[in-house]
Every structure is written in structure tokens, then in C-alpha cells.
Amino acid sequence: MAVAKLGVVVLDCPDPAALAGFYAGVLGGSVEGEGEWVDLKVPGGQALAFQQAPGYVAPEWPAADHSQQFHLDLTVEDLDTAEKEVLALGARPLDTEDRSRTWRVYADPAGHPFCLCAC
Image (cartoon, rainbow, N blue to C red):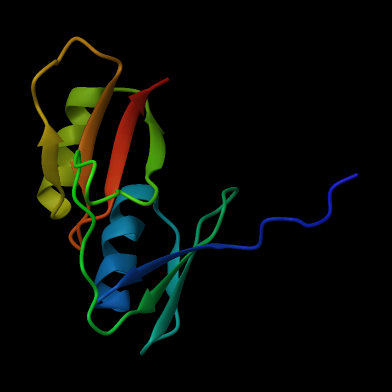
């Protein structure tokens, strides 16, 4: 029997509304709240929350001495199409070496790594 249920995944960032808007563009859903804490409610999916963190320093990928801390795997049907869309929303590629893989690595506008993964 589980001890708990996952409530929400929270990402520290300098601008919660901006980062919630980025992920709303990627995942859909509605942005709720303002200020230091903003929620993204995703229909049929796990909610994300964004918390303002004074002095926020983005993780570096790949860097053994600057841990990525965590990353999100986002499942897509077409990697090329999804890539164009996340780049237009403000993502930046972190790994462009092997285009034959079924996943690609990006950073969101606050620097958190995430992967687009072909389903």
C-alpha cells in the first residue's frame, strides 16, 4: 500500500507565470494563480506548479559538477514537429548530436532540462 499520492511537481524558476505559459504551450491546460506560485492544470495529466526562487540558478546539462536535478520526459507522436513547436515557444536544444535516437533534449526558458520522446 502506498504511503502517499503525488500531488504536484514543482519547478523553481525566476518567473512562474512565464514558465507556466511555456509549459501550457507545450502541454495544453490552464494556468492558474499569479505571483510567487502558479499552477498549470493539464487535462487528464499531472499538474505542474512553478515557484519563484530568488537567486535561481539554472541546472547545466550535461555537467557532472552542476547536476540537472531532474528532468521531464514528454511523449510526442512526431519529434520533428514537436521540436519546431517547443523551439518557437522558447526552448533551446541541449543535445543535437544524434538525431537517430527516439528522444531529444532541450532546456525550458528557465533552463530546466526536458526530453521530447517519441511514443
